[in-house]
Image (cartoon, rainbow, N blue to C red):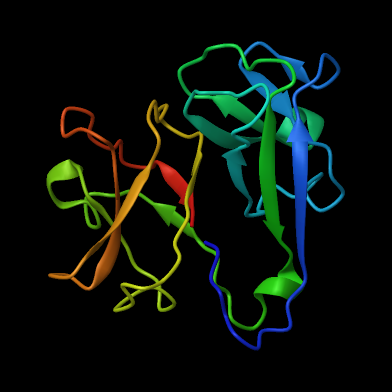
Length: 178
């Protein structure tokens, strides 16, 4: 969640990760950053860079405990093109405290009536149709083979995450970094 909080004196880490022979295997590219390494509870946001070599596949992040490292993976299991780049934003604990604008959303039957629109519930974005909300899928019980779509529902005064089609409902337990 990239919230533009005016007056917030927050630090953050942003980097561009490039998939290389040294850090990429098939549909996975490994991140190596001291703010992420050894931090399975970190919240990070990743988006593809849309210039040069482009990765046109839906992505998710995953913490790989064996390497104490976060990775980016293509959810459709297509190889990540070497040379493709990703924007990575790592909100540090200093950047989050005391406001905590970033959070982990877990899809459940309680927040996903009908299985399609999963309601995000957080004081920073509830009742705020003008919030700048971003989400990165976290690999979990099921692959999320689509780009997560976010939209505000004025009936519930909540932001909702949903797939591009009703024919691909959420799997309970799926997590999003929001």
